[in-house]
Image (tube, rainbow, N blue to C red):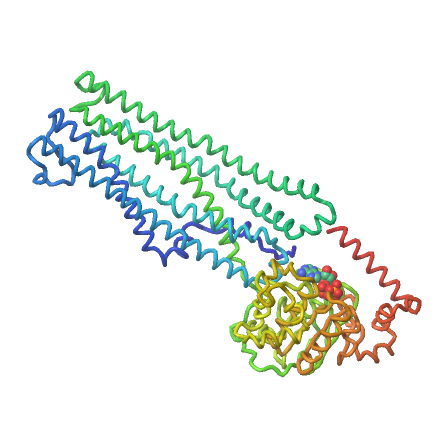
Length: 640
Ligand SMILES: Nc1ncnc2c1ncn2[C@@H]1O[C@H](COP(=O)(O)OP(=O)(O)OP(=O)(O)O)[C@@H](O)[C@H]1O
């Protein structure tokens, strides 16, 4: 981990008002759906209150004849004068309220779901776009599982809150206000008794929210750890099987899963207190209302400090409406729960989005249009980590247009690093690299990379067909061009022998092909892209010597008129290069043609002798250096 490593979890902690940002940054384009959801939530809840109120009013007016038929917001002239007329009128109002209530609920869930899914889609794609543009250093430091958990789990958590739960929260507010207004309208004195639980429930909820917040942040980060472990194990299943380490891995997964379980359980335990607590509060409100209202009715005059009239219709309204509060109030716990969960997720998402990419095009960067192909490395220094060990030191060389530069040297010497600096996968820490005389940092990153073809050590194929993988080099290529590229990479023959030829699916990371076949497909991809600058980093290491000879022929054609860097341990691959550079411990130790370097009798000559099997002819310094490096590598592996 580098000193300046940025962690989405840590950065997320300082994100202010993440849920508000979520709404304003991703919700504003879809706000109309949210508003429809809000209005239909209000109307659904409002309409749900109509039947109990009408029932209470009808009880007093139609059956007991205690009060005249009257409903708030309803003009007097609409009310039929006869009792039977009022009975059917009540039935009509209740039926209309129920039908429109059902329609409102349909509109509410559709619009809120549309809103939440669209927001989720945007958050996920924008998070991915942002993440993809971050530097290689970021990907070196962060585990795939952890990033997947942000892209997938965290965005799903947002949706969970934004659709159902936000609807429930809105409905709860409408319900409490609506019920409060009706109860006060019918009997303000008893309403105070019934609604006394609301402030207590609010306090209880506030206490719960404060306690649960920290738990969710922990849960989200342990999901990331678990994902990382699972992702790693699935990717390395071949190693696990061949090393017979199933039990060891069982234990590691068990530990990561148990950590997640323990954190999850802590939050659940809090819920176990909160939910029944709220339920108890609403039950107390129900019982208190029933006792006070019931005694009032039984004694036929006001009891305790109450005054005025109270009817059986009033008691029905009070009890039915108090009952209606139970379910939404207990749902409140879920709303709060999901809110805290979504808040922790949006913190991680915004934490990630606050990591700035360091390697970007500067404002006055110029486009690299046509490329002659001269590449200069001038006094290049590089370290992967700030204040870390310098991996390259004072690397200076020039490749003229069309020239092939071979890079050789022991493992870990810095050959790949030299090449990775050219397309700015990393930026130099000292000195500069120029393409056709312009510092690569003064060129737009996109145009620079467009002109560089890179066949790396780990040939990666995407899950898809052979054709799709070759086409990745030039999306608009004709089929004939794809076949020509495959022929040039010596891939055509084996591809046509595959069960479905170019339409054969290669499997995840190309697992259904051999290492050599994958390499040839990735060479075909680069041939199709036809870049002016080419980097072949051990591009033929996974093929047998016969195939290498065949690929070499096509590579010779490919590299003929373009500047090429070839890294190869098999020295026969670089033997014909215009210049060969020997790299050792991050420094260039010698340069020249094959013949010149053999004449030099230095590192290259020793490496050559190793490959020719002339072990006895090796210099003593070389053998001592090799054993020093081997033991250093062992120590490194041990510490990993
Ligand atoms: N992403 C990275 N983060 C930190 N250190 C790295 C990274 N990649 C490489 N290194 C270190 O930089 C040094 C040079 O590595 P590099 O891959 O350039 O060597 P190489 O000469 O290409 O080796 P090989 O022939 O084995 O591919 C090594 O010590 C390696 O451990």
